[in-house]
Length: 116
Image (cartoon, rainbow, N blue to C red; front, side, top):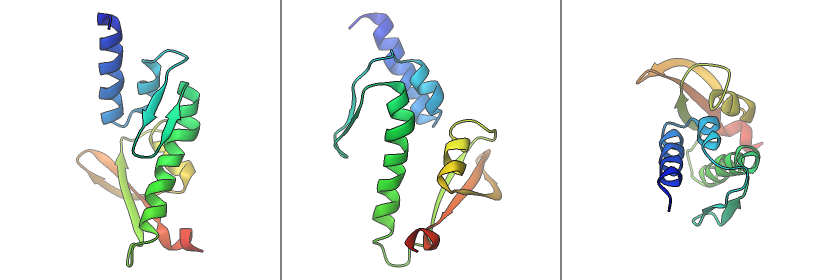
């Protein structure tokens, strides 16, 4: 693998670990195959990742939690600002709790509403 490919791959993973999904996809070519073997999903473009993979991943987590007795809220955190990932989470239905932990805003998804 060429050094530039390794650097792009590394930069993309580092952005993913920071949950900067828009930044992550900026490091990849317009055509890429990324497979989540655990979920059995593959995306082939940055658009598919942002529009299909991310919501599908949250759907899978929510679906699992809805089977768990007593699970009523899913929490996450992200940096402030209107863009990714905050904008994604707010569009999904998370609400800002007004709390800040480790320098990130805490968001919550009410699973009781998801059950109805």
